[in-house]
Length: 149
Image 1 (tube, one colour):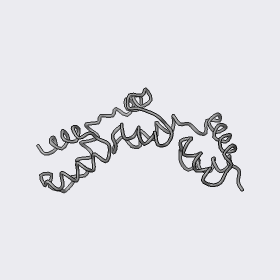
Image 2 (image 1 turned 90 degrees about the vertical axis):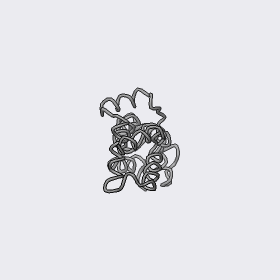
Image 3 (image 1 turned 120 degrees about the vertical axis):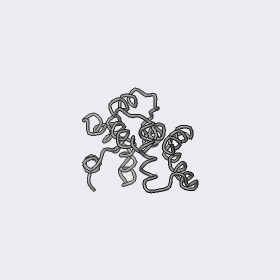
Image 4 (image 1 turned 180 degrees about the vertical axis):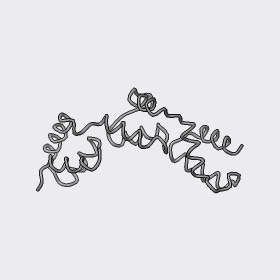
């Protein structure tokens, strides 16, 4: 069997992972818990594995389609506890010049492209879609009203 270290490098060569994600993948593949934990520690020390780097990339990748609160919840499921007020999150939002209103409007335009924005069924679908993306109802209402004008 290939070592946990080599398997980890193989996995990380394809995509960045959180420490918890990588640990779970290795355990699922049958590696010994102590060996996995030692491998995770060594990868972090060597700079091959970084929850902060992963979180920054994850936030950037999802900003255009999800609310920051939902992104933070998803990161929590990956073992990275952040809040929208966390300095790391604020820093990434500032670097990306993120605006929730602009992101929401962009999603609304994209979803309504070629559809009748006055159709009530279409509006309900749009609102449900945006709520699943983590946006607040108030922000969604503002964006939908802005588009309809």
